[in-house]
Each structure stands twice: as C-alpha cells, then as structure tokens.
Image 1: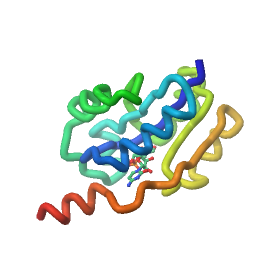
Image 2 (image 1 turned 90 degrees about the vertical axis):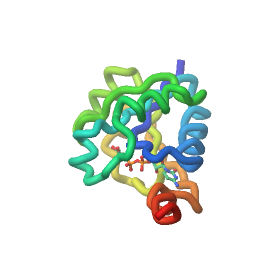
Image 3 (image 1 turned 45 degrees about the vertical axis):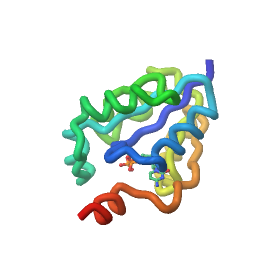
Length: 127
Ligand code: C2G
C-alpha cells in the first residue's frame, strides 16, 4: 500500500483544498492528513474559524482522506513519515522547497496551487 502524507489547516474548506487532497490521493492508495491543531495555528499565526475537532470531522468526511493526525509543531514531519510508513509527501507549491529535508525519507512532491480561490478571498467577499 502506497501511503501519502500532507499537512494543513484546511479552514475555511474550499475547492482548492479539495483539489489538493484529490491529487494527493491520486499519488497513492492511502492519504494521511496532518491537520494543524488550534494551538499550532496560533504558532502559524493563522486564525481558523472551525475548531480542530470540527475541521477533523469535515476532513474525515472527504472521500480522498483516509486518516487525520494532529499537526502540533514544525518538527514532527520526519517522525510522522517514519511512524506512518509514508511513501510520498505532498504539499501545494506555495511551500516549494520548504520540506526538501524529507527527501531522504520519502518522495517529496509540490503540486500547483489552485488559482482563483483562497480563504482570504472568501472572507473578503463575505465582509
Ligand atoms: N492549497 C491549494 N490551493 C489553494 C489553497 C490551498 O492547493 N487555493 C493547498 C495548500 O498549498 C496546502 C493545502 O491546500 O498544500 C492546505 O492549505 P492550508 O490549510 O492553507 O495549509 P497551510 O496553512 O499552508 O499549512 O506544515 C505545513 C502547514 O501546516 C501547511
């Protein structure tokens, strides 16, 4: 079984996130999502609307997602890759190069971000 890993806050969930998750799952058979906890979002200076529990509930309802694990810090990725027997690490290319330190442990793929949608844009449009 080819296992894929990605990370994110996934709030407010939108079709750009879904497109990332769809393409990530296409790279293997089992997709693990490291979901940023509320505490880690504070470290990321990111304000999520939904709580971790609710974001986890939403992600677990997505057909492409097989497992959700907590992302609590910047330093857990190597252990997550090892402990979950990950074959492919996937992130949007806004992170291009940032996770190349994982290359000794798994394949590292940066996928093009989906243009035309962002949580910031949603919030601006609704305000
Ligand atoms: N994404 C995308 N297209 C968009 C918006 C987001 O492809 N229009 C991708 C991002 O590139 C990322 C994933 O969707 O791979 C999740 O996006 P965020 O929740 O914004 O992720 P981020 O807060 O950048 O967290 O340790 C890594 C961090 O936790 C990543």
